Image (cartoon, rainbow, N blue to C red):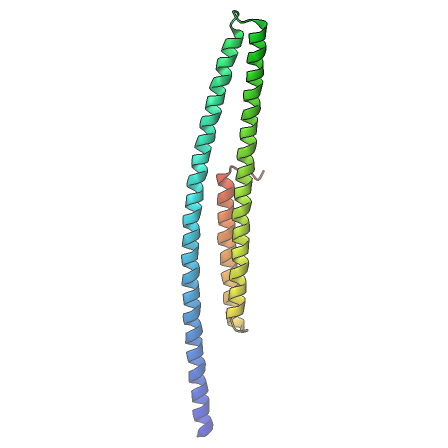
Length: 173
């Protein structure tokens, strides 16, 4: 009779442990979902800043084009002296160089932001993977949950990286 009671107690303790594990996993999943929502909010903010930067870059390009057009008009005007023509050509070259510098700077900044976002996601994914590994006992059922969680995180990370790439007009082919 004692062995029966011991087995019953062990079974009850095992069920309580399973319930506690399920509760902890549910809490962790909720925490991860909240974290993903925060990441989505940050990505929306990054998109807004990127759109504003693109608008500003477009405005700068338009102003530079207008300046170049006015310089060409002034240059084609026959009443200018040779020195004036040379000065206008220098100004035109300077504006073209500044336009190229602006394009290069914008590209460099976009690449920097992309790499920072990518590094942050990789770092966070590694932290979460380690947390999940450390918090889960070595059971095959929990390993499957860990693998599924990591795959979900990888999928979300890949989706975010692709969205960031598309924001920067990155073309794969």
